[in-house]
Length: 286
Image (cartoon, rainbow, N blue to C red; front, side):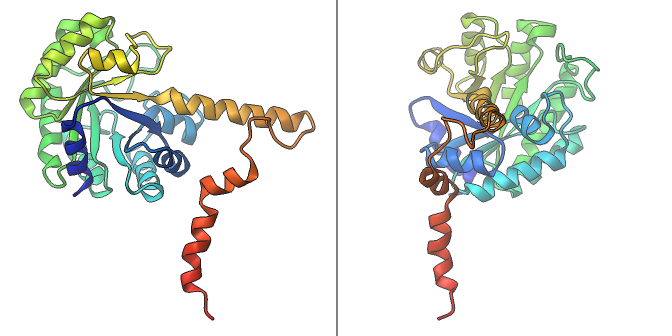
């Protein structure tokens, strides 16, 4: 089965699907080793790791595609939902992006409706007119037929245009054939339930990391509300950043590593030194 076929089968099974966020080969490898079947290649995490900065639409198509290739290379069995932001341009750019992610082995791709280039502020996400968004999602669904990659359509318009417009866009995404739906920034459980109902039985996705101005249920509560998939972008990135800070503080204080550092054996096992040696023995000339 292809990655998209495997993800479709997984989404048809009962239960809530947890997608930890990944951003490079190491995060993907560790996610797979922890037993997770799926992961979200998060634009915010890639921006943090590649640019050392916030998620403000500064990443390019090439950088995200390269990150997807790294993730797939390190964890080829992991079913990856790739963040494609606004598709990196107009409807034709969206088609190029969808086809490239499909060739690279992504199981699904996220396309959203915010305006690009972004206004020079970190506040708010003004979105494109509804019918312009329709054409981008139509283009994505058409291009997805090449590889079978699932299309996740996201609306960011709730904070700027209101919940009724957001729900109308989700309804439109369903009409256009999107496989997975995503209402960003719901304000309460009633809005979550409304978004799920508007998805017409198709799986609905949510960001469940705390801290932002949105309803953030627990995994158990998310399932009760009808959500199918949850991701946690800060759930892995923030502890990784805390680990780097702890290591730097320990070195600055005259030590060699933080108390939270992995033991040497566990460190080498996580990176696969033993696997490398086992594979390399097949090519040693005797």
